[in-house]
Length: 201
Ligand SMILES: [Mg+2]
Image: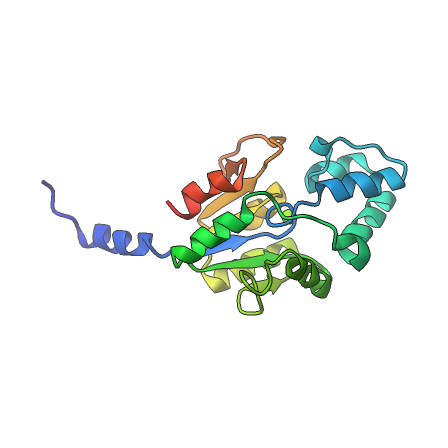
């Protein structure tokens, strides 16, 4: 049997020290139905497969997309209707049980509206609260915040976000509709059950 080097030992010790990061929209919250409904009210018929942020922006003209985004993320009456992504509560419970630190980094422009929604869905303050939820504006700020907090694993539903997370070693694309290609830059995940294998494994 081979002796373990100091480097191996250090790596083994470091291996247990995960810090998990979550994006909010498209990962914790499922806005797909809201997008379909608001798009329809603007005269655009979308399919569920066209609702991910990076797909919808190629289909909906920018002025209408702006109106759709304002309705879904900045109108408290509409935003509040979005449901949770299936499986997220079980995953957060299991992460809590495993005592692995985790946090939220979101680009919501109106954090108070985001927090009201998380409260309504029973997620705030039980799982996310002022101690582990962070709101930033630009994509690159997600990397700055993740680095500052020592995030080792981050899950997002946008490839462009994952592409700027240079300081996060493990990147996961939440793609429950299976509309994005595989990439060397991330691991594609179809559900929170599947994500649990990486976040808890
Ligand atoms: Mg998102």
